[in-house]
Amino acid sequence: MTVLGMPLSMFLVFLATVLAGSLGAIHYVIFHMILKRPFADEGHALEVRTASGRVSGERGGGSGGARKNGDAGAGPGSGKGADHHG
Image 1: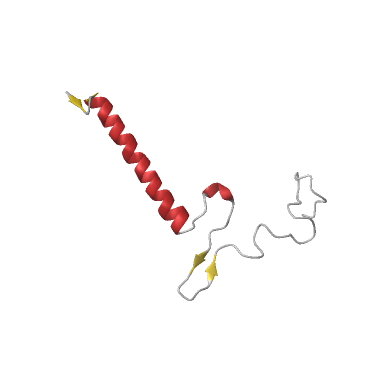
Image 2: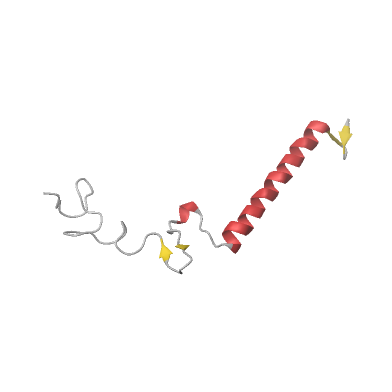
């Protein structure tokens, strides 16, 4: 049996491919274009606004800031400055 000139199994693969591509395109438009959500590998902290307008998420003082008593990231085995861990 043929559908649009293709065997049934080939038509089903074609249909699944079009459906998967459409779902991916819809996801991209909604989440990344309209809602401005970053991709996981971009390294941006996701900001979530509460009803009061406050922003939750990583702010100053997080792991990206400078550490006390040394360079950022300095520690045993890092090769970045002195070891200040007692």
